[in-house]
Length: 196
Length: 175
Image (cartoon, rainbow over all chains, first blue to last red; front, side):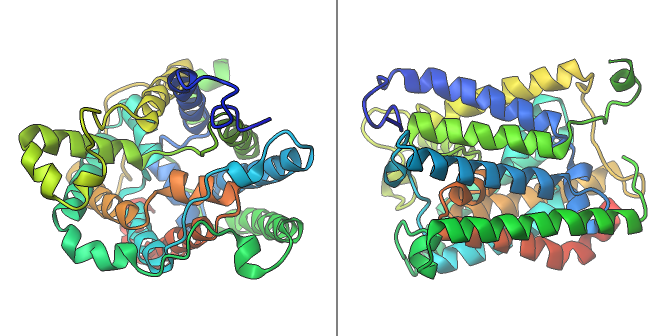
């Protein structure tokens, strides 16, 4: 029963091989979906290309539905999976800073790595920027320490936060995504085409 | 095939790409118990470089010291190997579609210099924000949402919400 490596079904050495293979698929899917193009990515913020919204939400829905089904069928133990911890203010403030960085630079870290691989020089500069950002954060850690450690709510899920069953939450997120997909197609027809 | 040679910007149907990405996330959790990530490798890179310059400094810094322990290199971690795969996978896909080449992609309305300046500034902000939120769009938002992490959903809403709010100020760069 999964997860295989934490449960000791696959030895730890496999982890490295699996990491490279998973990365290979990750990079291929992102690049083939057009995520190595900053102008395509930025389209979601101006209404001329909704690939980001569609790929991102489809992936989130497929994965959350799949993982909960596998848990239901007993193939995976969902309580053993790593849940990204919730530091309320760090998530909001960090997310807001990333949002400005996204619309200014046109990439996020994963997509910039894909663009680096196909030779986009703006992505090379973007990655350099990320590293400077990490350096600034680390060197001035004292300044950011409060916000970084503030309001630690632990490894909570929406099931804990909202007090609703997972199935309801997943259904709600699915409906929201379907509405968003529909609206995005309507919007795109009305917005002036941008060729890139 | 002929079609894609004429236009290098023909990509997969986004729902198809998203579906495959979702399956990949399931596979990643099934195997390793964790999700995907991207910004972690840049952190490892910075920690390694600073550690090379001054090991004393990394040990005394409250943030770096979390990632340097004993004789284990900070580059010896899962995300670094995953990223090597990402580079290879993206290169493979780009090769098949004829998209390889050194160039700066930008709107015809702006100069190369302006594009690069904004790319650098955007990168700095994203790098900073990803450290504060403990992850980026991949590690925090996408992998978080796959297991219904509250923090993952909040980070996702915050990233895209803020980007929409500020899109107006950066519109010259894109449209």
